[in-house]
Structures are given as C-alpha cells and as structure tokens.
Amino acid sequence: MAWIWLLLSGLVEIVWSVSLKFANGFTKPWPTVVVIVSGLVSMALLSLALRGISMGTAYAVWAGIGAVGVAVTGMILFGESREALRLLSIAAIIAGIVGLKLTAS
Image (tube, rainbow, N blue to C red):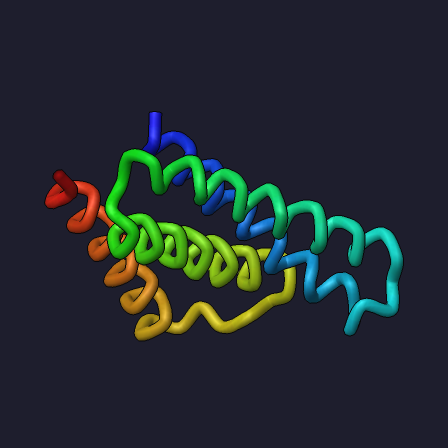
C-alpha cells in the first residue's frame, strides 16, 4: 500500500507544481487555494508512504514523479521544449525511479 500512497503523492505533487504557474505569484485566489490544498495532500500522502518505504527511496521517487510529470505537463500545456536531450533526460529520471522501485527492500 505504501507504493500506492507514494504514486498518489507524486501525482498530487504535479497538480501542486502546475498550480503554482496558474497562481501567478499567488495573485489568483483559486489557483492559490489549489496550491495550498494539493501541497498539504501531497505531503500527507508522502508521510503515509514513509511508513513502508525508506525515506531516501520515497523522497527520490516522489521528486522524480513530480519532475517528470511537470516536465511533460509543461510540454503539453505551455509549449515547452521537446528536444531530444530533454526527452532523454526525462527517460533517465524514469529509469532511476524504476531502479529505485526494483531495489527497494
């Protein structure tokens, strides 16, 4: 169950991070509310995951899910670069996440 909490936490982290863009420096109320709520939910889910996954592994996977998710979302929503090196770098992060999952005790 810890890995499910961790996956959900990472997905909510994507919402949190993307909402920061829409909050425009916390000048827009509803996106700001989404930032605050999703940040709290992400942390709560991460804390549940830490009950069954080592801290280093959980944090690295959480950050990796967020990094990949936000990078892909940026490409889709904001037209950010899709150059080959960037895609290769995202693939490397995914490989790291998978490696951490496979080696977790």
